Image (tube, rainbow over all chains, first blue to last red; front, side, top):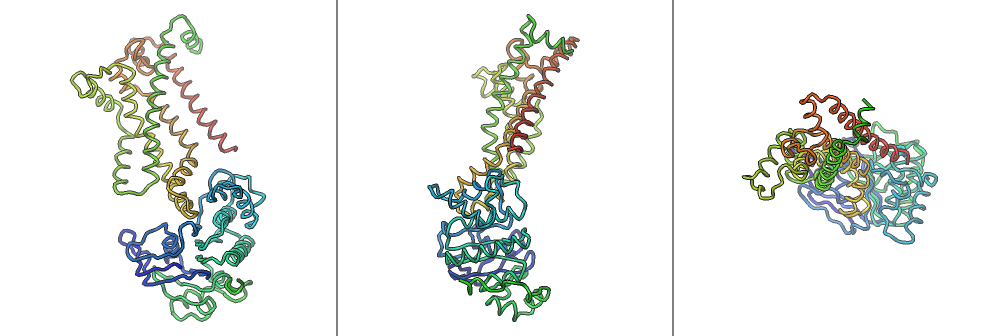
Length: 237
Length: 226
């Protein structure tokens, strides 16, 4: 479980996030949507523990070892892709096997020996994903995990996330610009605007029948129907 | 000119060889000490957020442009007989020249290192924290990632050390067979009208600079080909 209580984050004089209360339950999948600068990354960084709130509390029942966070632009180290993926794994006989399996899942097996810093944006994002899914974790937090990928790469990542969530039963939280992706992957969706939590609810309820005018205004730009694979991961688990 | 350089380098007069020896010894030790001080300081400064960081960065950046004669003056005052370190009797020695060089080069290595690290630090920190690596592991990966630019930074420091004249003239005294280095010798020979010797020395200095730059280029090439 992850919980925010009366949390506020300020950078200099600007409030970048203000959330009275928000709770994430284990075994569920949450999608966070909102425009650029709405506070999605700040919220994810708070949950991942890489950012401390200016005021308020972030409570977590998940130990640090059991939580993984994928930033929007993960760093690609100049050593091999395989080593990039295995760097977070404990030293053991299984280390290489786990990293190789994770690379196979994201479709980068053939690039295992290539330098990490020579990958394209989409490949680097998939390598970053392999890095965080190489171990089973109780909580996975992903900041726009498909922002640099093409449609095929996005489909692969969504499939990998569905399988990972099903296999581990983890709490999965991700942000996205695309409400259609939130509908495909998430059980619960959170809409942020101007650093505030506007609305939260089940994916189909919030995305198809938003209650708040601001959510409706945000969603009117998006075509939710007609996008394939709209089954939320929770129903597929 | 090449013939002149060769005859001075390999001829019976040992002076030029002695001058090159002192120059390399002084530049090597001053760069080594500066690297040992400047690299960790630069990593700490560039890789961490802490109160006063911006102020320290400004001081380091200012010291990067410290005029050599000011560094020479500070060390001269410290090491002169009436100075606080006068009892060490280091003035007009290679050690004094190394101290002055360290004062000049350490901020350069610190500043360049901090800049290199700060460009990558935030992204590396977040990526490493995301998979649960501790602060030491993050530091290790940051240093590993910056290893090639670090070598370039150290060699830039060496380049500065070998070409410096003001500070070493003040604290070394340009004593023949003792503290005379290439730059101070060039200055003296030019003042005396011995242009052939000065040009030969200048040629050797240029050759050394070329070799240093080639080494940097070669290391960067090796890394990019890997």
